[in-house]
Amino acid sequence: MNEKLLEVRNLKKYFEIGKKGLFSKTKSYLKAVDDVSFDVKKGETLGLVGESGCGKSTLVNTILDLITPTFGRVIFDGKDLFSLGKKELRSIRKYIQIVFQDPFWSLNPRMLVKDIVGEPLKVQEKINNFEIMKRVEKLLEMVGLPKDGAYKYPHEFSGGQRQRIAIARALALMPKLIVLDEPTSSIDVFSQAQILELLERLKKKFNLTYIIISHDLSVVSYMADRIAIMYLGKIVEYGDSDTVFNHPMHPYTQALFAAIPDINMENIEDMVTLKGNVPSSINPPKGCRFHTRCIYAKGICSIEEPELIMLEDGRRVGCHMIRQ
Ligand code: SF4
Image (cartoon, rainbow, N blue to C red):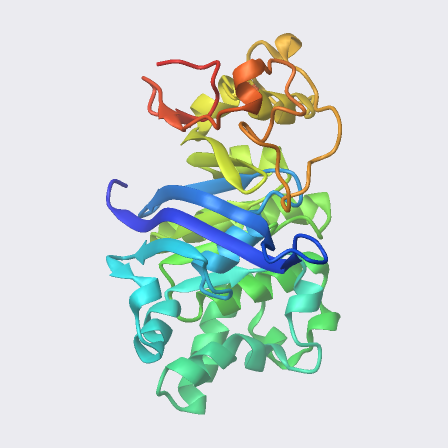
């Protein structure tokens, strides 16, 4: 698991939202992703965690080149994605797939399952309908659905089964990286466990690499080998999942984890819960972006932005109070 599959370097995505004032020439930007760097190794699962609006989805959409980045590089399997031409990018993009949060909306209700799952094959592979059908049946089998499900519509399945259809479609082109965007949040608890088991099984079988976005920390702790905690467009803590879950260092990670009562971690009684709302990304607090909500904030925190520093255990943390 040491070979890097994805390298994200100083990635920024700013959305222009107009002028600062009526007569001002200065433009205002919403800094959804601001100077984010991390790696994902082949065969590992990276968990991306943070409150809604922290930039997780924009980060993933920028990596997938679904939205144009403002700055930075994304290197996938040795290729610099933003420097590729359209044709080359399309041939690489098939190795990166996404499974969306709600399969009810992500699957076209007017299409039969065979067409939903077979569509990527039709677009990307030069194979005839008979071969596509054979592959579709195999894919349905892989995700635990009966072959005859191919001739049904998405609404004829339960939420968990619909998510299996979405997974089968994502697997169709044998991707190397699958982004799982809240993959279990819209299905019942029993199906959630089954979907997570399925994803783990498929990962092992096909040596897949996952990025999982979830607000459910139990899902992330079950799936992730490494974890990145995001706050207001920045990564504040990033490291081995067990290490971070057992001993969170950044005050934001501590507060976030403390809000989950059943998570297994040390010193939970020392932890704090979050106060106030997430500030706006249009005008984020100066210095450490978390200082307006941090109970440990000192003078320097509102002046100087902390750098991510690497600790002895290999994790990176961005907080003035943490020294090597
Ligand atoms: Fe809190 Fe200061 Fe650390 Fe930011 S830098 S998390 S405000 S202690």
